[in-house]
Length: 222
Image 1 (cartoon, rainbow, N blue to C red):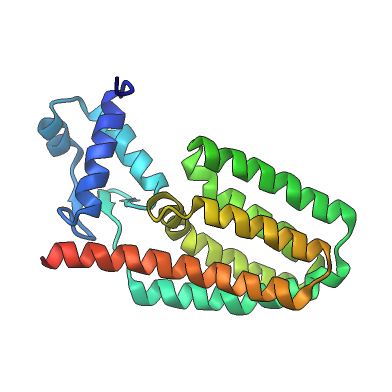
Image 2: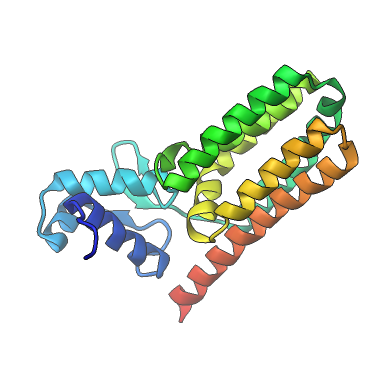
């Protein structure tokens, strides 16, 4: 027997499919009253569904204009993630020699909370926050505040893509394995190996997102 879905969950599931299938192209306005009519529900479950899709990076709200499907640029994604590689490997390289047991234990505690959220499929809107909290815990001993500030900005800009990668590319188990391996290499003081893994981790995430978007473009043009 299929699990019970609320009206909001049903609308979110169907809208998600319509967005990812290319029916709604990037930049399309999603009018709540029209959607309520389509689904024969009130505006309240439509609003809840749109907020769910916003947390997944598929919808964004513009002040005084309403909800729109997110316009996703492959070129922008590649640039964001390339910059992340440069700065985050730089931070990790300088951080590992200064890591203490307390810092590593704190990073592990965050990682276990992140694992629990991923494995339960809940708290989707917090996945990218957990992701960055873990990485930030590893980078903090570098004591490079300007670099950390730039990395924070890059992660804010790429958080919707990180959620999309985890949700839609079956990458959760891979991401978890790599995070635990990164923590262990850091614990062992393996600077070069940890930075190599971090580089692959970020670039693989990028390629997963790009493949997803290119598949969406093909559907739109097909």
